[in-house]
Length: 172
Image 1 (cartoon, rainbow, N blue to C red):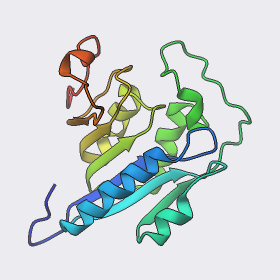
Image 2 (cartoon, helix red, strand yellow; image 1 turned 180 degrees about the horizontal axis):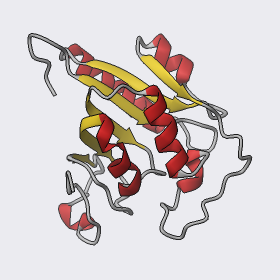
Image 3 (spheres, rainbow, N blue to C red; image 1 turned 180 degrees about the vertical axis):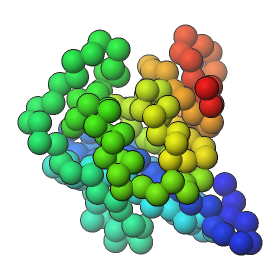
Image 4 (tube, one colour; image 1 turned 135 degrees about the vertical axis):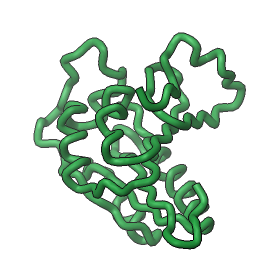
């Protein structure tokens, strides 16, 4: 993910914070974004304006934030049994999130980094047209992903924890 001499690597991080989700996803992504920026990358964030979001903190940390609207669905509940356990944390269905993300993103993204328990392989597959590569940060090992790089920083996690899932399968 290192920038070349002509143009910095373009990275967008899709993550959220809220009173329900907490702040950990955004905080670890801020740490990652700072390191990537020091390495010459251009990093921006894509966040939904949930109650308890950290959008102002991200901006004060020097990063551009593309803001997705707060949910207008009240207490959104997923209707599909195949959706991730935490699907309601998205604030809308995954298809609407894809549509909203695409509407605010350019298509010259080198890396889309995803740190969100509500997103899985379906969302990632649909977002591939906006980026060259997808990195997923996941510490639950409870759902399939369509990514080029999977990061699980959990102590004690092994590759065998992911065997039952179709993970890190890249472009397909």
